[in-house]
Length: 195
Image (cartoon, rainbow, N blue to C red):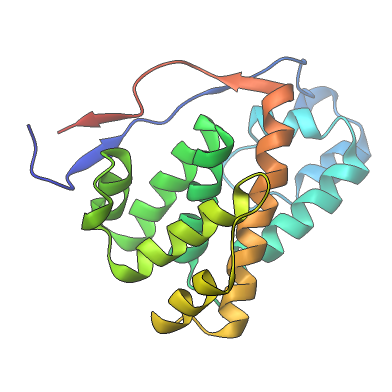
């Protein structure tokens, strides 16, 4: 057994139900649309699936990039934590996996993710606990977020504009998770491997 908080999360693979656009066969509009993805390394099967409707893909990705990758405002790890918590509530294993790994990469620590994965919430920092609790309450159907959640966030140093950024990150995953589910599935397997 590894030390508490020392986990490595194995990436999942997303498999589309529809054949993705093949880059070599893409229309000029589809090729142009795929350029808005933040990754310069590859165009994923998910991006290529969404590229069947290039106009919608550009609108979706422009909004997504503005929410998740904007300079300033709520720190990126907090945005990733909100996205992760929303994805867990929505049952999107793939998105939860991606945003857990992003949080670890950005913070250099897996302690927060380990606490969530092992249901040891008392190990979360007060700020992380406030973010996760708010994300879960806002994602619930019907939403359960209230003034107490906002006051907790403010008590942990999250200002009003950062709370708005967090709401955006949580809300876009209410939509993104539901878009990903009918279009494909992630491969089964363990979420994490203990080191």
